[in-house]
Image (cartoon, rainbow, N blue to C red; front, side):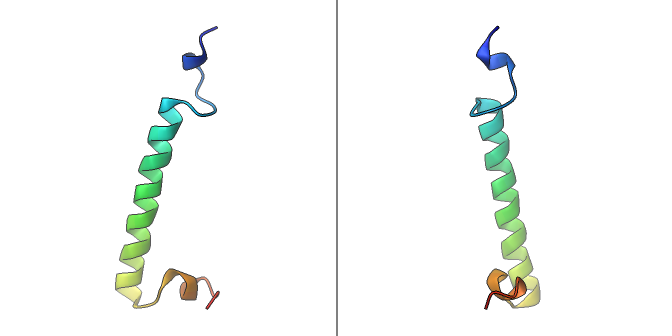
Length: 47
C-alpha cells in the first residue's frame, strides 16, 4: 500500500487544504472586523 494514496495525516493534500482554509478564515476574520468595527476577541466576548 502506498502512503500517498491515503488522505489522512500530514500529506500534501491535507496541508494544501489546511492552508487554503486558514487563508479563508483569516480573510473572513479581517472582513468581519472591518464590517463591525470590533476585533475578533471582543466579538467572542474575551475582551
